[in-house]
Image (cartoon, rainbow, N blue to C red; front, side, top):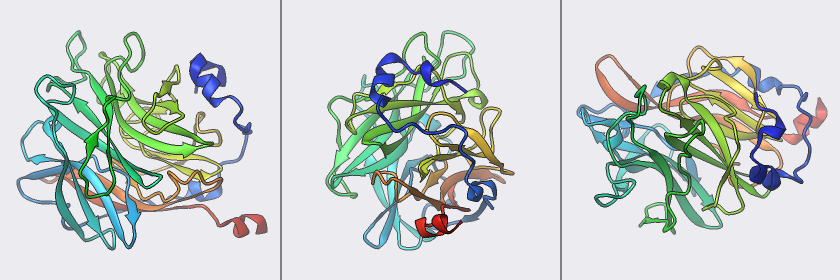
Length: 335
């Protein structure tokens, strides 16, 4: 794992002054027994002729849960999806409401498709992060080919929209000569120590999907500008992180030597394995009520949504349940 001094100078300045965290802090015991399990759901689950994947994190507004995801006809190129959304009162039976974000105009950076959404709620506004691409060329090319992927954001006053693409999008892009020189993808933003910490997936032109890694970019404002750390933090294909106690916990899916594990980081940068899981599904989107509150102690997660495929079915969204809730403060003091 990278040391603290491997952060780019600008990122180091942004992070300077944060409370020091002892890297030797023990792994919270509740992260060692995740009891990960899945089940089918309705409304955005399996449907003949329709592919749904890349669900966002889940948020709760009033008495209803909301989720965003990429959708297309089965058989269409995955990058050619657009972002749809749905709501539910129990996290199992969902109602699909329609498209939230469409493709950009011809020639725009997101003209071919928009995928992998993530939702943040800040000061009464909704910020929908998404990945855009302008062509179908894959990122695994073993050569000079490949299409750049960038992260943009759209803003709305209501979860039902209308959404306005932020004028300075994309807010995060690949950088030539770096580990993320071809793609930045799959944003997951957490309000932490008064800053916006964007965990994201990155990769360059000579890797496979099983070799993608997560990076970190930090900003003073939700719309950026974001300053990247110099090196990746850990391997992973889709980003799934949440505030846990005073640190950050994660589920790593199918990429890297730490695939299919629960991870723990007291400082949000250096991760260590907490538990091995038989399988963590791709597209993990947790219900995490502390992502944007800036809470000093995160309550952990107990469920979320992900994607599944197999048995001849188009890719579709499922629910996962886990035992990864942090103890309440009174329970912590009693131990």
